[in-house]
Length: 102
Image (tube, rainbow, N blue to C red; front, side):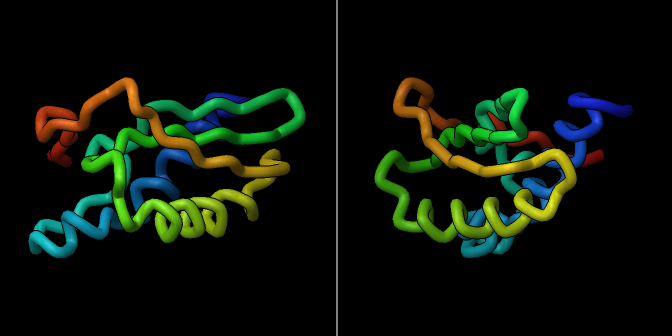
């Protein structure tokens, strides 16, 4: 892939390298993508990236930490000028969102 599609793929790969704290606590470590927590990735023409998460709990105590890990992982990417992390309150996370690796 190249262009925006390549950047989205690189962002997804980096997001999936960040482990969800709850899955680690349950001794089944999963990245944010595999866990089904990534609701949307939006890239503006100026390179501003917005990652929207669907959290397992709307009052997740780990949100600030996860957001910091995401910023640290994405800001070094070529084509990314800034990173904003939001979470949706419109979607409820269920275990059906988990994307198990083959």
